[in-house]
Image 1 (spheres, one colour):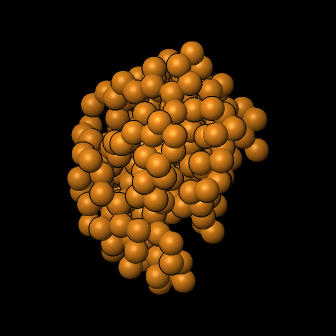
Image 2 (cartoon, one colour):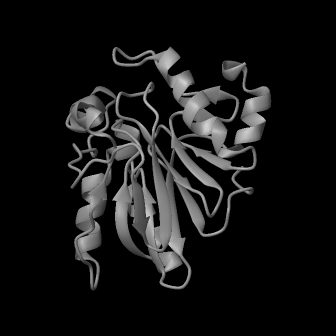
Length: 222
């Protein structure tokens, strides 16, 4: 399913929502970034150990429970590892703060008891560039699914971590009180499609795709 992904990227599928938690890393330094650790933290930790990766930062695309519900547990576990140090949590845009502070309550509605509210060390803004673990990630503000949704673009690798914006053959849900379908489609057309047809898109759920394929065939973008 994820065979077309660029090298130095691992995907751990987590939570009952089958969310793609991403691990990006630098081969030389064995340092990496975890993006959207929604839950199932022991599985994420196990894969980090197998890959022998030291985490430099945790990034969030948006504030939904399946993307951010495991942040605090992962942060605490990384500190407790041998030689562990405090790992910063970065993102999303501040407009998703209300979602991050409501994760535990939202999770309880699904009968999930091990997700916690997330507390980023700082939020991100459109146009910001994050240089972490030997990777250079451009921050793209792509609201619509949530008010503060961002995507992370690794231009050198031709890789977009899209969160719940653009999927293979679909786009993110907007049937929330704070969702905006027209805004999401505009975000995709103005921010994501111009990145180039060969860019690999890793969505928050399901298989990877490419910008060109979605430009040609995604029924929500026609």
